[in-house]
Length: 342
Image 1 (cartoon, one colour):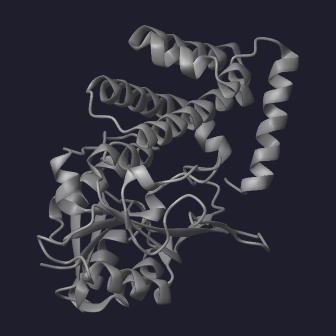
Image 2 (cartoon, rainbow, N blue to C red):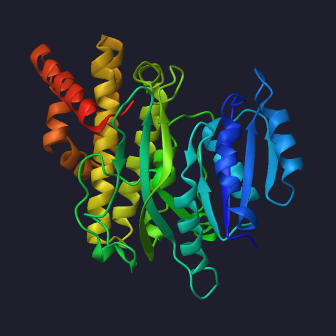
């Protein structure tokens, strides 16, 4: 069994995917790199994947599939994973090689059936094109550092300090046990990827290293503001699925107070993102999509809806006047400068 399986979803990624793979190859035989060619047709992604698999037999394998979107590529990576732990690295991102060795060494300490962790967290760095100062998301003020812990021991997460796909490595069997399956042809499913498994995570470790390099800057990137506005239906679809999942989880009777708070705050910020995108576009059609989203919340779970709707952020996202929209846009602009996203 490999120690770590890394899935790399690739769709027309020829111009940057090799750099991603090269940084992961430094993990040596402990790592399995699964290139998932998601029906690429505009370039030679498939050929590059096959060549890398031939050159690094036993470490790299390339799986080809009909186009199913980022989520389906992650699903395929998970189905083909043989490692004890599982990581997703997007093809335009990469990892810091020194930090990678530290991550692998730590995972090696938990490489037996009777001594495992469910999740390992580390820091990620926004590699924003043109930015002089790199924004680093770290967790040393909200997670116990360099030791095992449970949800009961976590602290307060600040806004912008959420656990994203970039910052987590999950235990492979745990992902399968929670029946994680991301929807096809839908962007922003990385939010589901880090949300759905959380109730199944019992034992965790936070390694305080700047491991993942998250590239920001391409015009066609899914997190580009204009692209996100154009894909608002996919954003709100993911938002609804997260709301449904959290609502059902709360009713299960298996919740944990601190985990509940973290999951609620994450759902809240995703709901804010959905709402602010409609406000930025500003048309009656888009504002109608925002109303549909919040109406859905109200019908699905009135109690959870009320908590979201009448939180400070929920109130701001449901202003009905031009001045209210102006405040929302100004707040978004300030947050964008502080956190340096998209």
